Image (cartoon, rainbow, N blue to C red):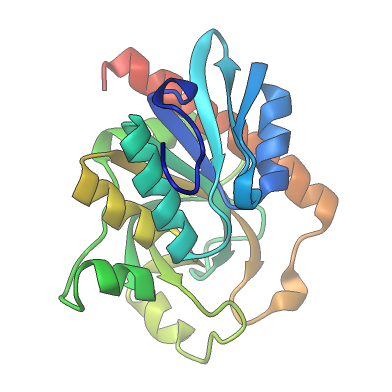
Amino acid sequence: MPIHIRAEAGAVAPAAILVGDPLRAARAAAMLDSPTIYNERRGLLGVTGSWRGHRLTVQTTGMGGPTAAIVTEELAALGVRTVIRAGTCGAVANRVNVLDFCIATASVPLCGTTRQYVENEPFAPVADFAVTRALVDVAAAGDRAVHTGLFVSEDAFYQQGDRWERWRARGVIAVEMEAAAIYTVALARGLAAGCICLAVDRVGAHETWAGDEAIANGETALLRMAFDSVLALENMGA
C-alpha cells in the first residue's frame, strides 16, 4: 500500500483522471455511478466509479508538481496505466480566451520537481499521442473553443514576471503547475498521460479571472470530456 494514497491495487481503475482540487474530485464523484471513496488522507480525495458503464478513477493531486508527482507515482504502483490531468490554466497565447479549453501536447518544465527527476539535464515532457488524440477528438465535438499545443508548468503562481511575451513568441498557449511533472513521471513509469485544462484567466492579469459559476460550469464540461476520452481510448484499444 502506498504511503500517501492508502488504497489497495483493486481500488483503482486502469485509467485515472487527475484533478488538483478535492472539490473538483467531489464534483466528479457526483457525476459517476456507484462512486466509492478509496482515499481521503492529506486531502487527496480518490474516488472510483462508473461512467457510461466503464470503470474509472478520479484522484486529487493538490497544487503543484511535488504532490502531482507523488500521486502519479503511487497510482502507477497501484496499477493505473493511463492518467489524464483535468485542471485549470492561464491563457498565454492571444488566441486563447478565458473559458476556452487547452490541451497540452507537451509542457516546458519550469518546475523544480521535473528538474530533480532529470537531474537538471535538458528534457521535453510530452504527452502520449493516443491520449492527446482522444482528448482532441472528444473536445472538438463540444461547443467551446479548443486549443492544442505547448504549455509551461511552473511553481510560483504569484511570481510570474514579465517573460510572457517571450513564451508567447515561442508558441506557448497556456501556463499551469502540474503537467510537466505528471508527464515526466508517466514517461519514467511507462504510463500514457494527457492533459486538458480550462483557461480561467490571462497571464499577468488576475483581474480577468472567471467567476465561480462560470468556472464550475466549465469544470463540469471539462470532466465530461476527460471521462469520454477514457472511453474513446478503450474503443481505440489503447
